[in-house]
Structures are given as C-alpha cells and as structure tokens.
Amino acid sequence: MSLMSSQVSEASANHQTRVYDSVFDMLPNADNPSPMVRLRKMCPSDQLTLFAKLEWLNPFGSVKDRAAWEMLSDLESQGEVGHGRGVVEPTSGNTGISLAAMARVRGHHVRTVVPNKVPLEKKLMLKIAGAELDVISDDLCPAPGLGDGSINLAKTHAKAQRDRYVMPNQYENQKNIEAHMRTTGPEIWRQTDGRITHLFVSLGTCGTVTGTGRYLREKNPDIRIYAVQPSEGHDVPGLRNVRQLEVSKLFDPSIITEILEIDYELAYRRALELFQTEGLRAGPSSGLIYEGARRIIEREPVGMGVMIFCDDMFKYASNMARHIPELAEGTEA
Ligand SMILES: Cc1ncc(COP(=O)(O)O)c(C=O)c1O
Image (cartoon, rainbow, N blue to C red):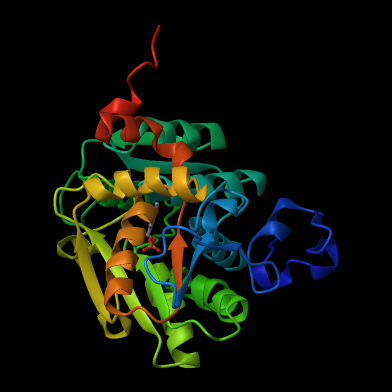
C-alpha cells in the first residue's frame, strides 16, 4: 500500500482537537503548520517582529520530517521501496532519524551512513529509530568524490545491493525542494498573513532555503532571504559552509539575498542564550541562524522576520558540553 502525502486523509486529522488517526497525519502543512513563536527579549529592534519556526515539534523531531516524507512517499508510489527493498542514505542525523522512523513504521528496512563526528546522541537515536548504522571516518559534511566518504559508501551499497536498497539522496532529490514548496513556504505565508519581509535559514542540503525561498519569492519578490553559514572547520552538524556546497545539487544562489558567515562557536553560545532567555530549546544551527538574523536586523530594523529553527538541543548535549566546558562542571559526583 502506498500512501502519498496528498492522500493523508484530512478526515482522520483533526488539527483543532489535535486527535490523529496516524502519526503521519501529524506531519506539517499549511493546515497543520509547525508553530511560530515571537522572540520577546532577544530581537534587536522594536520595529521588527521576529519569529522562530519550531521544527523540532514535527513528529520525528526536525525540519527533515518534510523532505524525508516527500522522498519516501514518492519512492513508495513509484514502487521503488517495498517487497524487501528498503532505503540507504548518508546523513548527519536528522534526515536519517526521520527516514528511519517513517520507513520502519511503513515496514521497510533502513541503513544510514554517518560521519563519525556526528554527536553520539544522534547515532543512538538512529539506532533507536531502527536504522542500521555505518559510522565512517569522514568530514562532518560529507563530500562526494572521496572514495570512502559517506555519500559514496551509501551509493556503493545502493549499487551493489540493488534488490535491498534504494538511495533517496537528499542532496540531489528534487522532492527535498518540493517538500518545502508544498509545506514550509505556504505555512509561513499564511502564518504571517503575507507580511513576512525577511527569511533567515541555514544551508545543509539547501532543500529548505531553495524550496521555502522559491515559494515565498513567487508570492512576493521583495522578500529578503538570508542564509547563514558556519565558519570553516565548523562543528555544527547538519550545516555546510559554501565552500562545501558543491555536493548539493539543490543550491540555488539566485534566490538568496546574502550569505553570512558566522564564527561557529557562536552557534553554541547563542543556542544557550535562546533557551535561557526565550525558553526556546533550539539546537546549534538555530543559534547560528539567530546570530545571522541579529546582525541583519541591526542593519535593516523594520519588518517581519522568520527564522527556521531546524531542531532542538537534546541531540547535542555532548557537543554543548564540549563547546561550553562550564556546562560539564558539577555534572559528576
Ligand atoms: C540541524 C540542521 N539544521 C539545518 C539543516 C539544513 O537544512 P537543509 O538540508 O534543508 O539545507 C539541517 C539539515 O540536515 C540540519 O540537520
């Protein structure tokens, strides 16, 4: 049985009472958007309303629920998965967790290839979700062309074991972009009543920026789209510096107003501040996006901004302790 996103029955999903027939009915769309919360204390301008869109409240915990579902339901409807054929995917964690959880519920097996620098919490979550795990020595941001890299290893598995695996390939799959054109863009447009002036995002596969940006620009070509990237040598799982972007076929610079590079250590400091000041348990990529937004708003202080906060802090506790050593103090008897 295949279950396309468009076939998720609205009758079985009551978004008002929040009673659902299936976990898949909880996936976000314009009728069931992920929440947006206004920053009350950390917005640097009182002439700009700044919202964070909380993607960790999606059913499998991150923005990647959107792309994973779009890719998986497409593969199901093409008959590419099922009857013993599962999926294999290189991931820095979030795509793999969403894919593994969804695929297992749908009865498919999942193998994920993960760079060793991915936090332990994410590797464990992958296993808890039911994925088989290949941990390899690779950059945090896997690049193609390196014989042993995680992208190549996933491709090798898919080629060598065609009966057993298909690779959704989030770096090249147009469904990753379409997911955000179908859901994230329309959600934000509706949630801001068309008044959004600034969108702040990060860059990984670039599905989020390209899909959401394209939809919003079609609605209003004046919307300014800022992408925030960590400085080189960074340790922010899920993100890429533009010099690592050749891997993504989904990067479309024509819709980006400006790319800001931010010292990656600030990702951790700002994430801490967001939790302690605004009560938002945002992960490090959100901390980085916030810092980028703050700098732009100081320059452009009027309007309505939306930051896409991709996931939460729980998967990065060990990274936080490494980057902010005082957090580890007093945690042992
Ligand atoms: C924590 C986190 N933030 C941001 C992103 C970037 O999203 P995208 O891949 O759509 O560019 C990812 C992608 O994996 C991520 O895991």
